[in-house]
Image (cartoon, rainbow, N blue to C red):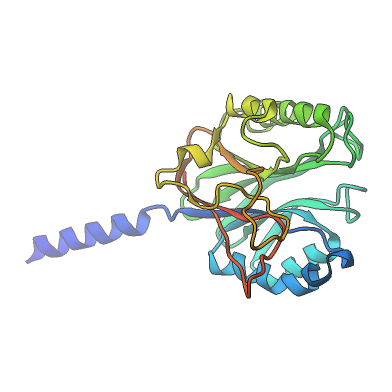
Length: 276
């Protein structure tokens, strides 16, 4: 009887110490503009919040988030902290590419933002880009396991071909400099590029596309951009989650969540379940 109890306690303890997988979502939430009419942010924000909450995201990365959208998300998730700044002044002006993380589960060890330009330390335009673009990153330690990981979140330019190519190269160099290959890395965001493009190929030389390495076959839509067109097929896969060695992708899904035949953004959120 004692032996059975000991075995049961050992099994329970092993299960308790097992690491909980990390649910991470990257989502271009579409900037707040009244020109979107029925799809404008005030009509969508509760659904975006509900999506993050329903899928139990421990980390969620957003693109195109304007200051008022950041305020809405921060208010909705008091248990989360975010890393990121506005791209147009390095403070609160312009779009954010921010990383929200559960601050009860993760401790911030370091973080910052750099611009996708020839002068990444300054608020600046890069190459032939139509807009200022940034990459925000955070170094996190999971308090329960002690595991450390980096999360980088970005939004590539929608017009500048040179900018997209140089941005990919810059981010890879920055990842090497910041992480030093000491801890696992996640790079996610809206890259405005299809999987066959040269910049995505460059990133794949250093990092794995979670769509391709997921243990469970990819779920949901292949394409991630649809432009709010509910009845038309999504157009192209331009949102990604890349991972380094040391991270196992258990699940990948481009989620087609909707309400009353309406999507919550012009992009689909990409959800991955990660194991360090």
